Length: 328
Image (cartoon, rainbow, N blue to C red):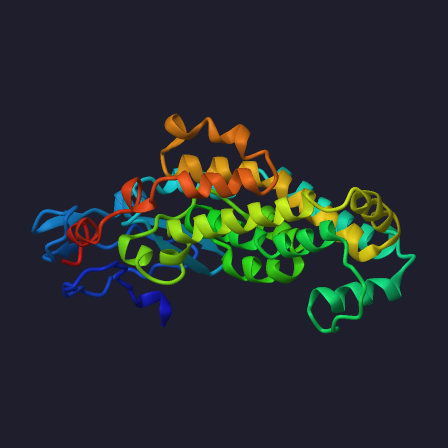
């Protein structure tokens, strides 16, 4: 019964012509060319009453055969489907594999090889830093206190770098949220899955949460001032604080892993600064900030304060987006 039925295939057409059944039975294993379809819809890429020939199916439909079924993918909105397919299938996964290997090695090191000689002291420090323990006369190391609070600012910096211009098919916001608790150990999987180019952000999105906060100069300025104050607080401590902190680093898993987290966040930041800079088409004017971004925390925070707004560089306007919509 299926052999005597001729099915029309069409994409985004408002009217179908009357088709007569074929006289000759066609086998599913030998598909014929697409049936002629007459379009009367006012599409921008077709003139009225233009005939679409089935022989030119590579221009409109990508036809694949898998067993007895045929998969048709519309490419009407894709100006160069062959190039897109090659770009998706020809992705180099070397960097992703290396980043996943680094992530696995770091987790193994933190859980199995990092020093863990003072677990009771680590729990005490954690309660003191979370204000779960009252004043008992013990003076906390100022470097440790500064490091603890500045680790809470790093996710804000990475959110301002990743969400506007570092987005990908994989959503970035879950990794950014978990980075408030896991730091770089939560961000590394996203670094491995990230696949440029990032999708554009419209002006309407920039006026909504969270982009209106992440693009704000107030947020960038507050982050820079808070980080600068914490670094100065750690540096002006007693001379014995550095020697004491080094001893903690060698014995405490909590302080050892946190210090490693800070170093890795500082190491990855210049790349995302460069990515954000090129995404805003500001590389020619802001390239001098690339070496500055190597300075831990302060360099990326200064860039966030000086960078131009995304709406002034690459964000498409809503009016232009609506005028180019084929449905209008």
